Amino acid sequence: MLQTQNPEAPLNRKSKRIQWLKWLRRIHAWVGLWGAALGLLFGVSGILLNHRMVMKIPAVQMEQSHIEMALPQPLPVDAKALALWLQVQLSIDREASKISIDPEKTVTWADRNLQQPSQWRVDFHSPQQSVTAEYWVGNTYVSIKRQDANAFAFITRLHKGVGMGTAWVLLADTLAGGLVFLSLTGLLLWTKLHGSRLAMAGLGLTSLGSMVFITLNSL
Image 1 (tube, rainbow, N blue to C red):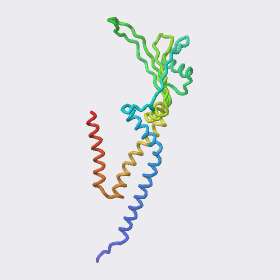
Image 2: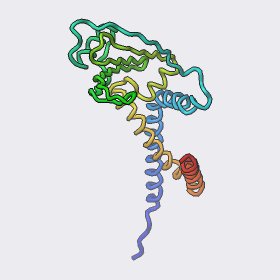
Image 3: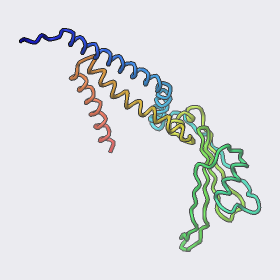
Image 4: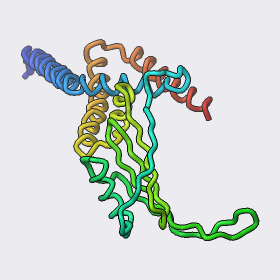
């Protein structure tokens, strides 16, 4: 007995394919919308970072100032105590980003061996400013350098995550993950909607080849 092919089967497969493509395009669009604002921020700041040295963009500036502050008596017992004292005296609303200690050591200077005291360094970072304090153990004062960012420098510091917490890092990770997803879904949509795999392969390989060529020339 001859089996007759169900004429609705190809239509069902086509309908499922159309529904799948609609779903893929919708997700692609929503992920793109989620990353639009962050993508604009990272795009603008990326351009500034790429060209700040070659083009000498004057907009990206950090205004610097330097002071020396007398320390209280008795002197801070350790670097953490110094950081807490600076936080109060300078009205800084966050804890120190980094505390480093360079231990006491012997150095040679003018053919003499001298004992160099320990140095404490305390850094406070935020997107708007950086405060760095350096203290040689035994001194009665601490040297403080402050850098204030203008609007464009503020954007580039956001790009690099300077002074930002875990929440910002995780938010930036969602953008990175979104870009990976958009790349993959973009490839799928291109092959399914445009159908020109040869053009897709040529464009993708040209982009990849350009990246490899420029990278090798820079080594």
